Length: 219
Image 1: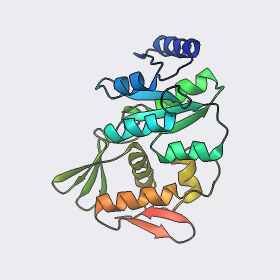
Image 2: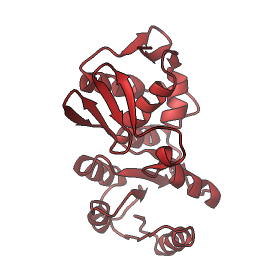
Image 3: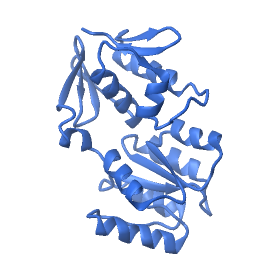
Image 4: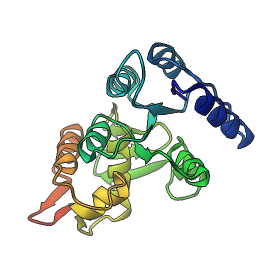
């Protein structure tokens, strides 16, 4: 938990420990980045308004050095543009302060690594197209004999497309299920993420459905 308000940080760490998590708190961005990049950290809760470094810069520092790290942003900001920017920068979720404790715990559970596999929603290896397999445990694409790492957003988007294989997924659906946006703010994050996935596949497995969205080829 990276949060400069001491009482709130202490409260959240205690809450997480009571819920069964091994939680630690950091009051500064520098300390938080050091903790976040350690091998033992599965998820980071990040406040945007930090005294030493802007939260967005902390997010970029973490996701660029350790792309597989899941970052959930907690902030009182109501500016839609700022919320979108942190999601585009790699945050897996955004929770507005003040929040309900039960919702925070649920979002953490959903975003932790291994949740999908443990819940039985996905197997360890999912076929994408010929010669391409998704390793859900390591969150990597296996392309022939090569392995290609995926960001959390790329992994979530691809898993969604696999589950809906052959069906058209609208941009609104993808924004809601992958980015947690209940409305279309006019952002192109879906298109950008699809382009990145296509480059990693080295195939046209993800088809564009004009003026609607995307679908993964049926076979």
